[in-house]
Length: 254
Length: 357
Image 1 (cartoon, each protein chain N blue to C red):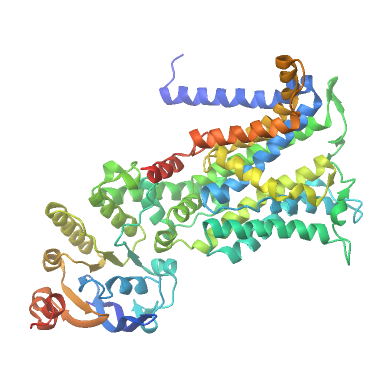
Image 2 (cartoon, chains in turn orange, brown; image 1 turned 120 degrees about the vertical axis):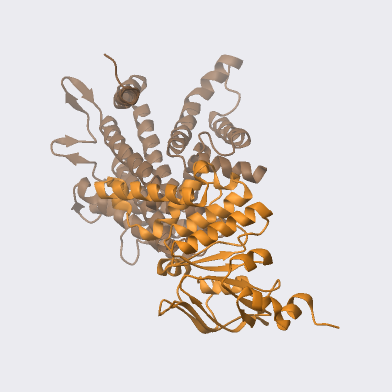
């Protein structure tokens, strides 16, 4: 195993609130890395800082040996990190297929001239974009809904579509923000299988999750944040017994 | 003879397109029977189609509300006027100037787009509205200290299009049939329109078109998917503006006179209305909107007085007043009963359904 993402002393402040303070960890290639913590612990802020929506105030994100801390979101995606959103952000009025095709944007090249002339290379690229998008819909199990509007899909399918769209950008690191939120047991288990399959196919995963059963089941290691600070890291079974973690979740013993 | 179903369908489609093509090409002869002014009206309708299709790229595809679009029309019109009139004594051929005007308009599109990249909706609308006015006021005042635009007086004696022996401002004869100037412009406009339609349709169904849709739907998600929203937005502004510039050049030659008065805010609003009324994002809807809004006021101009005569025996209300009243009333009705436009795009229909539901 080799280091894929190194997070070095990252800090982020919003006005008087220290959302992240000196957060340091490393994700190894090929693992499923969990990020947990009580509400407001800074998990989503860490995601947004990693993916370029905010720039960190201190520290750095080093991805595959390259400092990506100051890159805008589109360059982060191009570098090989894709994400989903806690409050699903699909292109709701476009079809599921179009959503995934848009994910191919960053790995394809056709410009205005190609679009207007429809030369052979553009048509060929367009054909490959569509074929790949259909393949990805099949991969996450919603191929049958390819032509349905994304916003009309069942909730669980919307989560799957967001994953397919993110995979379309060919990431080496896929960051999922609470993918199991609102899912029932069967859906959650199916999601767990999908996440493992993605890892087995060579994509490293970073996962924010509230659902402890899912975290225990699939994560190789977890990092626990509380008030923007790292309070524990390790295999899920060990972290669960950590007194600091128990205190963060349940409050200090009286 | 039996044909495979898809071959037969293609044959039907081909025949349909050929019929529409012939009808469009023959239209000026029919209109000329009613009066040459109707050929001119048809020309203006096609000019508005060009403008509306250009604006549709910005508003319909990329979702950026632009209320200053007429400025690009002005840039194209003034480019032609300055390079083909006695103003500077330049008389370049039209086929050389039109691309220059379109490119210059595209540059102005980028100029407007660059500072407004972070703005959306109402805020963007206000800035673009201001931009349109700035361009018009500049044209109005660029007569001192160096006289460029001739200020509010405008530029006249602009060259008509000339192609070899064909002069677009004069009536010519072909096989004994009189071909008037407006008819020649009509066919030229028809070719331009078909080209612009093809560009619109192909852009919409392409990698770039999808990127525009993504930005319109959710800019944050679009960026997270690796779309460089800055470049893609500027591209929309530039592409849309270039069609405006092209239309402006043709307008300049047809009128042979332009002044800043032709490029006022109400013209921008007119073009936005065409896009919205027809169905933003849907090329065919936008064309319908442009043709209707260009032609209906003219039809009303000619019909309001005679209808009153027939009904009441005299003209009760000034035709000019009732014309705009009916026009406004029609717009209100369309927006009440077809809020997504006459021919809405599928996506736009979903958007409105979502908001209502």
